[in-house]
Image (cartoon, rainbow, N blue to C red; front, side):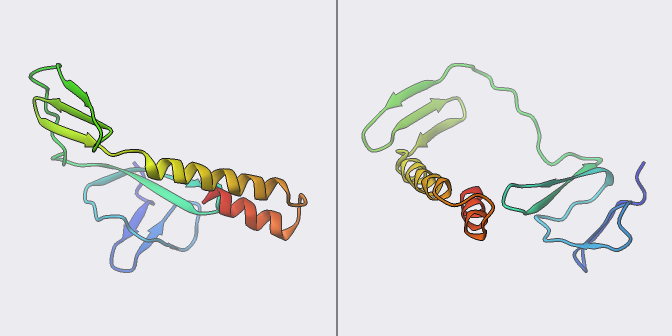
Length: 131
């Protein structure tokens, strides 16, 4: 379909139809198969990500149907939640890091709101908040 989309694994380059030269990329992992499409997106902090859709002969992940839909949930002190089902048990830690992250986010939002709009420092604060 798109024979102009190529990935050079040795040089770390992504070739797209509207670009004359390859773009230097950091590969998450190698893949094989026919490239169907590439979606390029930009995050708020200015980073670009390319998502490559590949058609392969043998898929990597096999779908396993659950034999039982029942599960047990235990609220505890050491772990916030323990979920037990047919496949085993899964423990959820207390959301201490979530709370710390929310506090940091509030601090960055306050700092950004105090900056003068359009200034260099407001742009730096916006990037810090986006990260």
